[in-house]
Length: 178
Image (cartoon, rainbow, N blue to C red; front, side, top):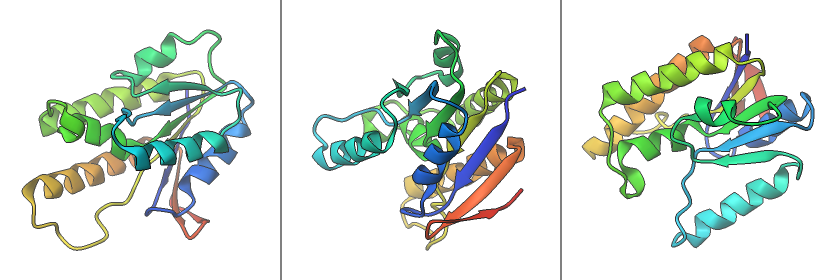
């Protein structure tokens, strides 16, 4: 059975660096799942993606924004030694209609993530998932942003419940939640 290690926290808290360190400990056949679908018109985000790529070993394979993460991972040969998913929030954004894609219903999003979690638990490799705590501020005035914040919280709760380890990252320090 595949272990799930969940890292969550605010922006610039050290989640990505810690996730890379954990994944590296499982060997050099890591599969990095980038859940962000590139937008060629967004130069600032392209620079962020480049910086993250520079932090990862060159031997890692990258899967970019697969619709079905589990199916994309199952097709890899050889199988990965570990999977790192960055991030749950960009996975969610892709499904709520941000970026011009047709949005899914809340129930469909929650069901799709539950299927992914089932696949990660059944996998023969560990899966490291990066989340983001987006609900630590004011309640957004916009209904779409409230929906997004709530869904991010629900998905984080489900991921932490399925995980064998859950960590809150703050200022580069990890606090073990479970």
